[in-house]
Image (cartoon, rainbow, N blue to C red; front, top):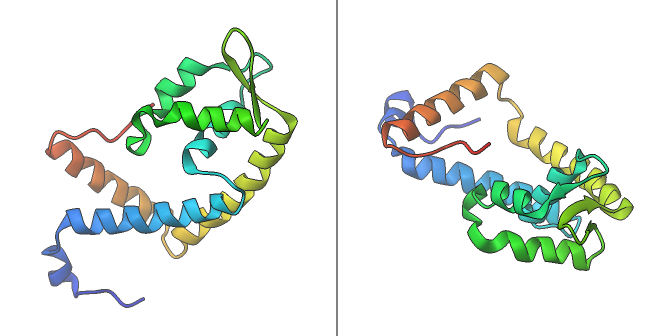
Length: 152
């Protein structure tokens, strides 16, 4: 691979630009893979939150609260959940618990395989220890400026 600058030049590059460029490229790659299955990234997140839920499902409010902080989705989770309901990929009982339908499980499984391939493409040629080091550096920079980087 050819790099844009030598090491000395890279050390002077703006982190804001490169972190934005990495975000844009990787998120676009993943969203393109999900679109092959008719999914947006927020809908994918909902399916994943419900995939491992037992037969009781998960409370809608819990799913919304958890996912609303992802990539600045904010109040956009409610319509995404409604779309999954309209497509009969999930159900909601009167107690507002969400569950995957058999069709939702099948779509999630197909999309999961595609997302795994997309992730492998993103990580190609990047040893795990290099990836971990990069994340630690980014987390430190985020911490240095008082930002938040993790949502449970």
